[in-house]
Image (cartoon, rainbow, N blue to C red):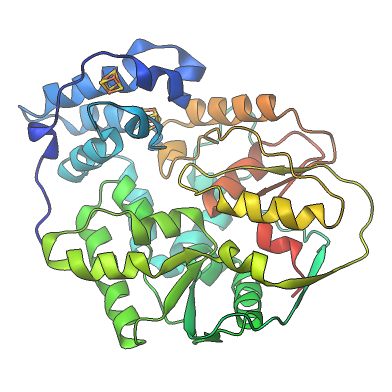
Amino acid sequence: MNIPESPEKDHPSCILCGRCLEVCPLFRVTAHEELSPRGKAFLVQQFSFRDISSREASKLAGLCAGCGRCTRVCPQGIDLPRLISSLKNRHPGWKNWLFSRMLSNGSIFLPLLSLGGRLLPQAGGARAFSPPRRPIAPLFKTRVSRKHSGRAVIFPGCFGRFLRRDLTGKAVHILGSTGLEVLPTPAWKCCGFPLAQAGFLQEQQACMQANIEMWQELGRPRVYTFCAPCRAGLTEAHSPEDLHNDMRMLAQNTFSLSRVLPDLGFETLPHAGPQELVWHEPCHGTKETAQALHNLLKTKSLGLKVPDGQCCGLGGAFRLQAPKLSLQMAHDLWENLSPQPSSLCLTECAGCMMQLASTGPGGTETAHWLDLFQD
Ligand code: SF4
Ligand code: SF4
């Protein structure tokens, strides 16, 4: 497969317009110009014309959470997370190797992460970095509606495959309730999104190729996922030329699971009392899940607080690379959320869930939105 060696060589130049400064969560918590996207775009361009040491690459790569906000506003189309991925790819001798090794061995990655929050540096009083274990009381029970037809399959991601299989079960049940024929979940590889962020482009593209082959063997069904980075990994990843058409077809057939929620009937379940519900939009989410949940909760006279999306600081391997900054970003997020003591924070990203659960103020809980549904 053809991995671009250094896309930064042909990259447009920064015109110092400053738009990226307004949206960068890292710049927001530090106000250091060298941590700003334009500061980093300049550094990347400098680095592109010479070899850099692993130490330099590690330092640079640890200074971006990969949230993609700067790319979305840059008039020059500078894709800083991609440039940094490329640099990482050429300089693998840094801490991300650990993260990537765990990801490449999907069967051990998330269990290791949950057992070994200790593998990730702790700082600033964060609690264990692991998925929340305490089940929350479900609010809804799905009714069969049969408004859809055709074949579909769930892409549960590493989180749904290894750590929270119950979420995969709920997802299959919800999808089946729409009338779709739900195929058995194959042994998908990692979606590739965190691998690409960690700079392991060959591994990402090997996963992409394996997933495309499995999808083709299944007869190209619709693919539904309940993890925002997985959706991004299957629909937005840069693919090499030889996989381009297949990847485009897979992307066109991949959806967030929440898309079927408006077509389903639900029974509401008795529930313990008012609790503030807050939504955390993952950096690579589409906002459609928040809207679907908001509409559903309204039927139960419950609100969903949806603040402006703010990065939680997990950023793939960012917590590993720059733990203090990562936690600073998480604390900044919680401060802006200013949750009530018994708030339940919902999201749809395994990494965000673990970061939020390990940094939230006492009394707050974090859960995946599928936890609102009964098995
Ligand atoms: S990707 Fe996000 S964290 Fe990285 S420089 Fe851009 S805005 Fe800042
Ligand atoms: S938005 Fe793009 S062009 Fe403007 S300062 Fe940032 S990197 Fe430079």
